Image (tube, rainbow, N blue to C red):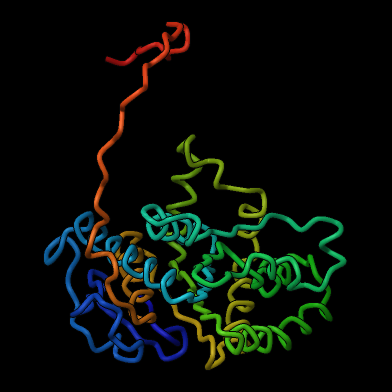
Length: 297
């Protein structure tokens, strides 16, 4: 599940458990999240049905964000193959991309390398009525850039000093900043790497940087600990997601996200559909070549 400071206080839960909100209306305070009863996936609930129910709640949250003009930033960080992309996909697949956007920036250009570090991320921040999910974020500097030597020690220390202030500025401006770290065991990460190597449809997920990072496991672990220690601020705390089981991680992170933003259902009354007016229209003749051949019948 998503636990604040789970990396430091040693909080552990049953591997088979998922957290359930008693009332999926967002009214549960974040600090009450651990007190809610737990269910066993596959025994107390079905993954597909539960995911569908949560996606309905996300649609309600989306409409509330739009109606209230909220601005939400959710950051997804973690080790390679930890399941960040899968969780983001399940959150966004039923939402309006004009309201809920995913930002996954590539390698900075030569021009961007000369800018203020946070400058390339600022244009992607949400306007009123938007939620932005960062698939990796400005925390690249505290992780891969620091470990792989893509930034200087001075640049790294400056980031660690200014990042908490940058996020406090975002919060003071009215943006809700939510930060998730997807934690995966060494054994499960290795299994996923091997699966990607064998599966042609997943092999693209393995970048040269992913393969190189395997040589620096200990350095990445130390960088993560330092990142938590320096950037876990009251205004924008870190939440750790146990991601050894992808399905449980997806359900837990969606439930936790719903618990952080109080919302009401504004979608209960569907809009009436007016009748289609087909008067004064005649379909023009079409060339048969315009139709795609029906190979599969």
